Length: 254
Ligand code: NI
Image 1: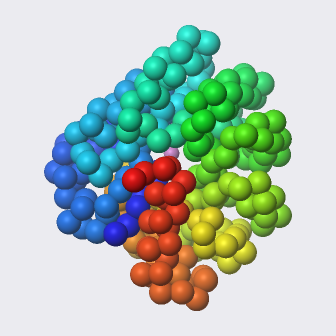
Image 2 (image 1 turned 60 degrees about the vertical axis):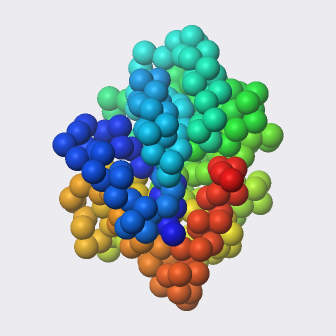
């Protein structure tokens, strides 16, 4: 079975067929899905879906692109939500310096630190989003040595990947690693030990080749496993089994 460790089924793009899609996943080979929130509201939606589907789990957090209106009271709301037994991580949190319209860098950093502190308090792993903010993200996660997590859609250097592996962190990859212009991701995948890799879709975005540009869903996560297998000289089954075990261990899923 495949474990899609990062998908956003709260997205409007799934409004038409969400239930049909999610119900069909186990019979299509996807046995586990983690849906991270990007706001307090979508974190609540993630928990509602996790209550409805045995194969779904939730993470709660505020994404850097969505933190404009962050106030410290949001941490109390997330703390409350994180009590739910199907919440397995704090996420999706991080830094995103790509879009000019994103909240100011210093403010994003403040929101990230507040959520890292919450993860430390609750002893939960974190799901990190880092876009064009590699140095600052790494510096902030190093401020919290008791917290480990995963860099989702890892886009940093091989050197930073080695540092993260030494710190006990995981890296996860999605359809972006299958794109023709992907250069760094294959190098990193070749370098990082299999037991530190997870697979994801980031659905509805980043559909893997040959579905690039279309709506993505968890049934396509096997294409990411196949890409990793090709890079590492393994079978797709070996990668499927390892990433399933890695995900269950990382998120502490029985
Ligand atoms: Ni995401």
